[in-house]
Image 1 (spheres, rainbow, N blue to C red):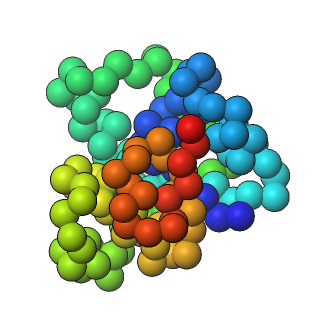
Image 2 (cartoon, rainbow, N blue to C red):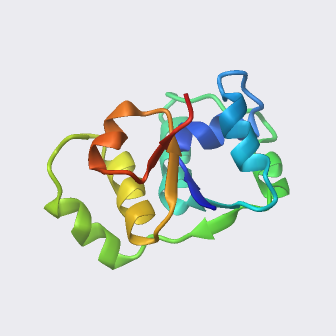
Length: 126
């Protein structure tokens, strides 16, 4: 399975946070699955960290580098799709991640119930 991680799922995984469910841990840890992290998530993480809204462990980059996640770049075609959708979700970062998961035929691993409004691509980890 091809999975795109929502930003909070990425943070929970890298930080070994107990909020991450056994289902999510199993999917991310399954060697048969290909796990993608989007540049949008990293942008959101660093932006919130620089604004003082998110504390990161001092070795966050080191922990992230140890993972064998695939990088999913932001491409122009995905940005157009976001503008055409109904406004179920107001968070611009989440809207872009959902668009990329849909366009790339991936499951979006999230706990965000609002993401499910965009179709069957949202895989809720709770």
